Image (tube, rainbow over all chains, first blue to last red; front, top):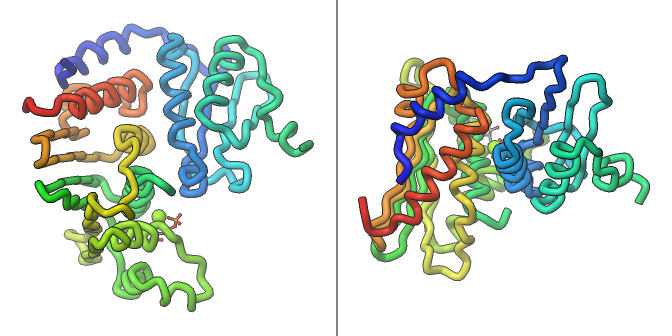
Length: 124
Length: 186
Ligand SMILES: Nc1ncnc2c1ncn2[C@@H]1O[C@H](COP(=O)(O)OP(=O)(O)OP(=O)(O)O)[C@@H](O)[C@H]1O
Ligand SMILES: [Mg+2]
């Protein structure tokens, strides 16, 4: 049974956590969550990233944040991944399954899933 | 949008945009299956002019200004079930705020499914970790009641832990899901 009291234990654990900062290999996942994104299916995409990062023990290295409209509404749901010393990767037209693959191959495996990037999408 | 929970996310984001420090989402369903969803905030409120625009869909089409579809669609979702829609808002300094109430007849075939309300609540809270939210969902039919108040969470967590930390998001999600599964207790 979950209870509010558990938060104290989570807090204690988080204070011990060594957080990898910008400049040391940190990865930032940004999900577009404006009305356009939500209508296109961004909410399950966001949930998949959050669960994927937590379940793969990546919370010290990867953060997942929400942002407003990224300005390319026709490509929503859109996710941008920022990593030190690397070019930003923009994934477009995502769904929960594609997000799962990005967690496994990009966040865990370190390899960009080219077929879901905006560059590839524009070629079709 | 095909789920009521997605509309709720959209409408509650208006409260955040209006600068609300506290937004309350309350869902209650009576024994006849009549479901009232109210979203109440202490944000800046709406002037009469804005209020007229957001409640009258014909009014909006006549203006040249780009107006959003969030509230008109939410209203439509309620009214198409035979339910109702109502907004109260005040811009009076010190006590400004808005309350959007939508009533749905869940027995109507035109009532959209609720969908993943837990994701909506977690997304909303983690998207604005500095704001407070109170969520409640009471269903008279199966005596189920679900509740989450970020102010209570903050009391335990203190300033050191942000509500958008992934660990906290996972906890909120499990905490709410468990309450939804717990039908008869409480
Ligand atoms: N809770 C609120 N407090 C203050 N003003 C509000 C609130 N909700 C809506 N409004 C006002 O009503 C307008 C219309 O809201 P609506 O959700 O329909 O569209 P939008 O938020 O402008 O755009 P969209 O939701 O389509 O991105 C808002 O722009 C805002 O000015
Ligand atoms: Mg809106």
